[in-house]
Structures are given as C-alpha cells and as structure tokens.
Length: 479
Length: 97
Image 1 (cartoon, each protein chain N blue to C red):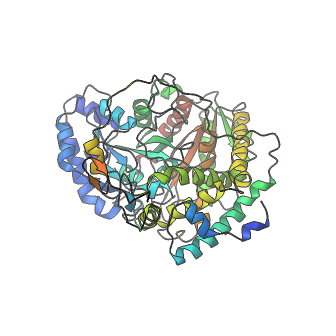
Image 2 (tube, rainbow over the protein chains, first blue to last red; image 1 turned 90 degrees about the vertical axis):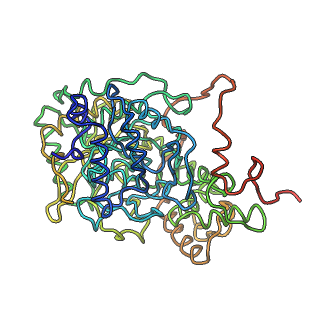
Image 3 (tube, rainbow over the protein chains, first blue to last red; image 1 turned 60 degrees about the vertical axis):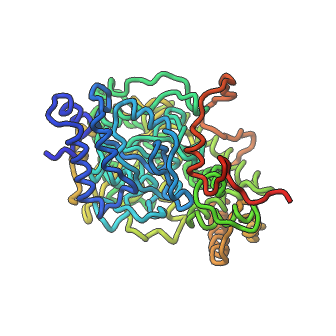
C-alpha cells in the first residue's frame, strides 16, 4: 500500500514500529504531489527541502509526530508565504505562527505547504483565487468547493495526510462534502483565531480536513484550547475527543429539520442523506422532527454580517505596511489605487456590499436588522437542541458543479452554502463526512452533522458510528 | 428598507471603502448590489420587535490581560514585508501640508 493513501492513525503505528521513516513518508507525499498536482493545483507553495528538514527533526513520541499536514493560505506560518490567494499580499512572508500552527508544530507535525483558496476565503468554489483554479480530484472539470478547496483537494487527492482550513459560512464542510473527506468546523471560540487572516471575525473558525473521523478527532484535540492571544477563545479544558468515539449512537436523538429538505435539492443528494438517516436509525439512534423556522433568512443575514465585518477587516490592506503599493497623488489616492489593483472582483463586491450595509442611513435597516435575525436563528438552534443531541442535514444541496458554471451569478453561488451558513451564525459545531456518490458522473455527497456548542465529542461519536458502518470513506478518486 | 434602494450611489460607497473602481466595475457592481439588496429585503418580513442583536455567538465580555511588556516580533522582519522603507521606518505619501 502506498504511504500517501494512509491515515494519521495508520501512519503513527507504522512510524512508531519503525516500518517507515518520517523522511520516507514525507518523500512519498512530495512524489505524489509531483505526480498529480499539475492536474489538481491544490498547492500554492511548497518547499521540499524545508519539508525534509522538518522530517529529519520529527519527534515520534508526539501525537502528530512526523505527519505531513497542508495549510490553507490564510494561516500564518513563520517564514512561509501567506497571500490569502490575493494579489494584494503577493510576496508576503509570515513573521509569526498562528496559534493553531504553533500547536501543530508542538505536536510534531510537518508543515508541508500552502493550499489554494478563494481570495480572502470569499467563495464556494476556489475559482476566486488570484493564482488559478483548483480541480476536484473526482472530476477535473469540476470545482473542489470552497473556500478551502485546496486543502480539500490535497487530502482527497492524497497529496497530504491531513490539512487545516477555515470556515466562515461552510468553507470547510462544503469542500469536504464535494471531495469526499471529513471536514469539521469547531464551535466558535474552541480554536484560537490568532494568526488566521480575518474575514468575518464573529464567524471564522479554523478546523481540520482528514480522511477519517478518528483523524479529525485527533487533529481537533491538537488545535483546540484556550489562547490568551484571542479574546474570543473560550477558557475551558479540551476533552479527549477520541475517548468516546466508539460509544455508538444507541439512545441518541437525531434531529431532522424539515426546512432543510427543500425544492431544488439534487435528487441523488436527498436520497443519499435519507439513506444515511435510516442507517443511523438502524444503529440505534432515535430520529425526531425538529423545526428551524428562520432557516430561509440565514443566507441574507450571513451576507450582510459577513460582508460588513469583511469591509472593516480588509481595511488594513491599504498598501502601507504590507503587500504591493500603487502610488497615487496623495495618501487617499494611494489607498484607493492599491486596493483597486490588489483585490479581485468577489472581494471588491463584498467590500462594497458590506460598506453599504454599514453606511449612514442604512445601518439600522441592514446590519442591525441582520444581527437581530441572527439572534432568532440562534434561538431556533437552542430550542431544537432541547429535543435532540445532533442535527442531520445534507452539507450541500448539489454535488460539485462545473468550473465556470456559477461564476457570473454571485447570488446562486451564495445559495450553495444554504445548509452550512446557519451553523456559523449560531456558533455551533458542524461536521461533514462522506455519505455516498451520485451515479453518473460519480461525484461525492456529504452528510452534515450539527452539534451543540462545545459538544464536538457527540458530533464525532455519531460520525464515527456512521463511517464505520458504511464503505464511503474507503473509496478513492482515480487520478 | 424601501424604495431608495433603486438609487445606489456606487461612487460614494467606493469612496467610503477607499476602493478605486473602473467604470465597468461600477456598472456591474451597482447592478449586482441592487440584486443582493432585493434578496436581503426579505429580512423586512421578520418581526424583530424586542429582539436583541447578536454581535458574537459567545457571551464573553471584557476579556482583560495584565498590562505587562513582552517581547515583540523582530521589526526587521516586519519591515521586510513593507512596500517602501527607509532607516527602519515605513515611507508614506505626505499626509499634512
């Protein structure tokens, strides 16, 4: 069996027994990248010499000792480029480690390279990258999802053993679903955002992409935990996420929101998700109907709040301290020209919408009203979780679409996040895992599990029970 | 949320955002902004009387730390990322006459 196809837990055994060295494993991944990344274009940057140097220094006694991990181009890694797939940060070299990265280093992981994304994490297809399109390993004419499409394609294409991404409205779960890997968005406040370039600060979370649920539990345990450098990081102990993986679903209540089974959903997606629900029932879970009545407003709330926060966060890219500068006649013109030349169309569109929603005369009607409806969406979840332990939905209403298919219709693109967005607004945790494939062409389908705040243990336990009783995670794309 | 959405002053918004747009972008974004505002107008249907706004999903307030000095990132490294520098400082266009 090729080393690059193995999971973290399989490789830890092999490394600790001395069957393979970290250098061999790292070289196997570099060879795999060399062989397939010309097609997939998951990576933006890679330094084989540096990766092998890290391999030679790896400490196998640590939880991720010697495991190569790919990093979305939005997280700062000292000495590596960090561009957020934007021209405005071309050539930028990080001068510090994000906290999640420091934790990976402390756990012995090898930081393999930088993965592609939608510019500043704004998008659902990775087509908004300034550096080119990443392709779906299951069908090279299709998108891998986004915004963390490079991390998803790297893991699904076996170019990394695991990866980190970020999720503001579905940017981990949707690409995980579209490429058949496991993607987890932690509860807001569980993983420190220090060193994550901010898109929408009240929604952003860092999370893992892995091949299995067990690996997701392991990686989450490494990156989670309180950090004084992020004032929204919650001071609470991190549970052992692997401990209860095997506990099964007997007696757990699985909530089905009727608002999530909508017109316009792909028929094969709906059939696969309904089959997954029957599977959980056959494993001993109890299925209960729940209501999330404000679901229909989530996309509108999200696109006001996320763009408003983005318009403020991205003000820092003004050509003063970092990035390319375009000189104007005065300082104001320098800002405007730098930003006009440096940002791509989707980022500009969202800055315009966010600035408008915050501007005098419109603040109450748009931004403040969106924040109030956000409260109602949170209350929907609080009430639903009085009746159930986990909510089950599709991750995405359709399988991966073709490159270019939705590029000229921003609103249609936004609606592809319809099932994931509410989770960020409410602050809960969510996970996507493989639950089948469409028939022709063969494209992955993802099942979304939504958990109570800080109850990742139950989320992972349900995911593990489902995964271990189904064959989907064993399927590999032909590349 | 009413009729004045039909008149979006895209130049004013772009100025507020310190964002230079081409004429093609101005026309395109003005039309798309209008579409998006028409979509989000559905929030007007929701009764939000007495509902508090949510700015953050977790109830942390006033997170403080001791006011102590600590080592900073090496300024030499930081300046390497700046577009124009001289003598350990970042150069800017003149701000005050």
